[in-house]
Every structure is written in structure tokens, then in C-alpha cells.
Image (cartoon, rainbow, N blue to C red; front, side, top):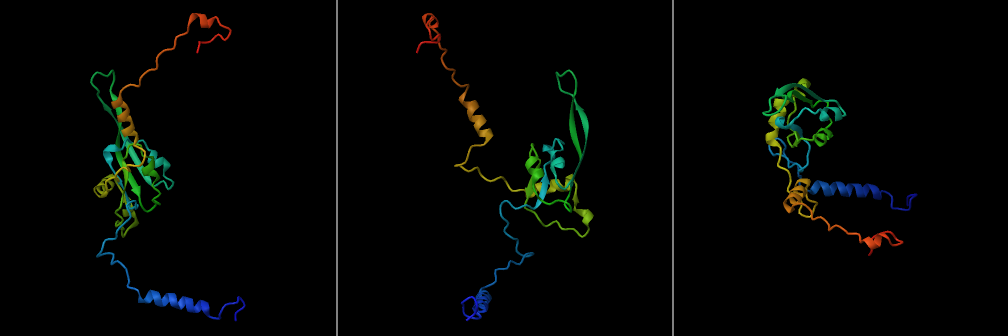
Length: 196
């Protein structure tokens, strides 16, 4: 008997039993280059850019903990008919993400107020040179074709803000409560308030 009160060598026998059980099972290895893996729906591959939605607010670059987003822009004047002076708008010149620094935290996608950044499930963008992992706005825009559509809304969940606002507008303005009147004799009473 061992000092712990069990049969000597019981642990070794249990370990060998697990090994033998595993050896007799069929292998479920996927042959990766030939068979594409089935990725989970929220997998994080590469970040895609929808350039027309970007307003150059710089939130993504400021919030990035790795400082791997580089943005450059210029201002253009836009003439608005009937306005006293022309307005200015930012035009995106450069939007680069250095994927050799990126840690795929997704903060840039979450903070973007105009839905210009998306997760793409594509993960096959390895390069022979680390300098080629710096993707410019054109390269990031090419990944938009691989972004899956958003999942359907859960019917048991809360409605979106847009649905709530649309329903409120369709219902019309809320009904106003009837005004309360104060009787003149109630104002002279010791309570000084409206009669019930």
C-alpha cells in the first residue's frame, strides 16, 4: 500500500488507460490548406475600413492602446446653397493600420461612432516581410467584401434605438394631461391648496 492509502501504480494505470482510449479514436484533424476551417461567427481576423463612413474624428487612433493606427487628412470647403459661408469637411488622405503591432483588442471598432471599421473573419494575410503588414486605406477597403452581414435581431431582446425612435414618431405627439383648475373658495381655505 502507498502512503496515501491507494494501490501502488494506480495513477500510472489510469494514465495509460487514457492514452489507449485516445489512440483507438479516429483523428479529427482538419487538413487546413485544403479544408477551410469553420470559424465562430464573432471571430477576429483583420480590420476592414469603409472609407466613405470615416469622418476623420481620430477616435480610433486616440483610443488604440498600441498606437498602430495612422491617420492623415486635409480640409476642403463645400459650398452650401443658401448658406452665408462655405462649410468645411475633413477628407481622408491616409488611414493605415500596422498589423505587426495590433493586438486585435477591437477598441477601434467599438469607439467608431460612424461604423467605418468592421471585423472581417479573414486571417490569411501573413507576409514574408514585416513591413508589408502595414495596410493602407485601399488594402483595408478590400477587406470590406469579406465582412459578414450583422446577425438578425433577437426578437426577445430590447428593440434598437432606431426602432424605438421610429415607433415613437409614428405614434405622434404624446397626449397632454388636462389642466387642473383651482376653485377660488379653495384658495381661501386654511390648507391653501386645491380641493380634492
